[in-house]
Structures are given as C-alpha cells and as structure tokens.
Amino acid sequence: MEETNDGEEQSQSKPDEAKEEGSDDEPSSSSLIDDAARAAEELKVQNDRKDKLLDREEKLEALRQLSGKAEAGQPANKKEETPAQYAERKSSGN
Image (cartoon, rainbow, N blue to C red; front, top):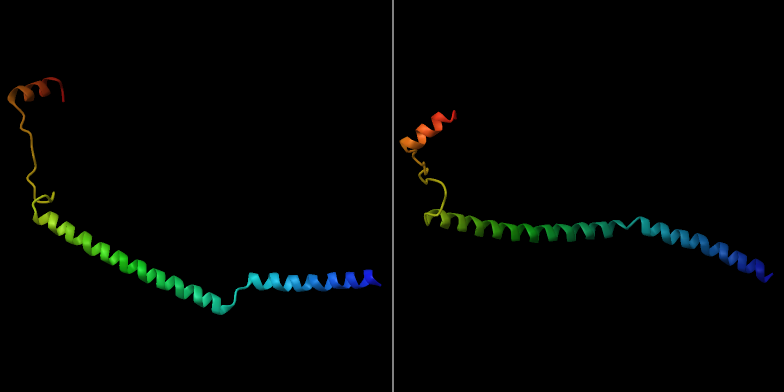
C-alpha cells in the first residue's frame, strides 16, 4: 500500500507543479501595471535629461555662431587661376 500512496502523492504533486508553472506564464494585471508605471517614469526621467542636453547644445551653437566661428556667412575662398595655369589646362584638353 505504501507504493500506492507514493504514486498518488506523486500524481497529486504534478498537477500542483503545472498550476505553479502556468501562473508564471501569465503575470498578474497589477504586475503589468506596475511595470508600465516604472517604464513611464523612466521615460519621463530620460526625456527631461534629453531636454536639458538639447538646451545646452542650442546655447553652445548660438555662442559658436555669435563668436564668428560658424561656417554660415563665410566668404567662399576661390583660388584664382594664373594665365599660365589656364593655358596649361586648355592645352591638356580639360
């Protein structure tokens, strides 16, 4: 009879294990809500950080433009060709 009891105990423990495993596959809705709330808070923190960095970048760009180091508005540096260089270029066929 002991074998039968052991067999029954083993068969009874298997469904319990299956129930526990099934509960791991489907998290509770409160857990999902908590995870979403944490993710939303992290996004807010990162967005605030990015806004601060963007403000700093805009200030640096404005300072760079006002200091005269900006590329916009610079005169184009055209190299003038000497008559000898022009003649050489035309005689070579270019």
